[in-house]
Every structure is written in C-alpha cells, then in structure tokens.
Image 1 (cartoon, rainbow, N blue to C red):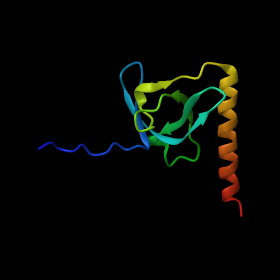
Image 2: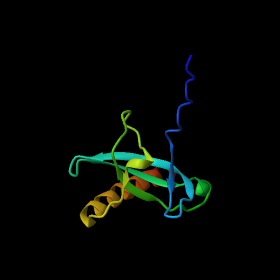
Image 3: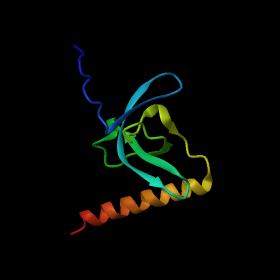
Image 4: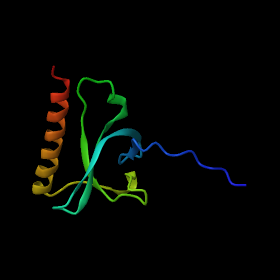
Length: 103
C-alpha cells in the first residue's frame, strides 16, 4: 500500500539564493502572454506577508503538468520590452486592487 503525499501548497514557491539559503515566497498571481508565448508569475517573500509594502519579483516560468508554478522552472526576465509588458500588467493589477479598496 503506497502512502499518498500531501498536496503541495500551490500558493507558495521556495527559492534558493547563491549561498543555498531557502526562502518561501507567496504567489501573488500568474498570467500568460500571447505576444511572448510565456507564462509569468509575481512573487513576494512570505516573511513580508503582513508588511505595508512588499518587494514583488517577477519571473517567466514553464508550467508543470498541472499548469502550476515550479520553482525549478523560473526564469529571469531580461528583455527590456518584455519587462515593460510585465510591469504594465502589475501596474494594472495593483491599480485594480486599489480601486477595490476605495469607497
């Protein structure tokens, strides 16, 4: 009889730095770009979850077999035009989020 593994938390990714230190990041949201034919993810450190301001990081990624983010497949965004597109998506997201809090 095989033991089932608990499902991984699909809202988190663990990243390692150059020294091998691991940090858990929460997934803010993901999106796909037809123009670039890629998927993108916005992450922020879980340790900053309750902070007033958070440092958001963006990566392109190759979805796993379930269409989810896997930390092993994150790629930096090096192209300036691609980065501008990603930044615009984030600006739209944060602008929409701010609109939801206004009364």
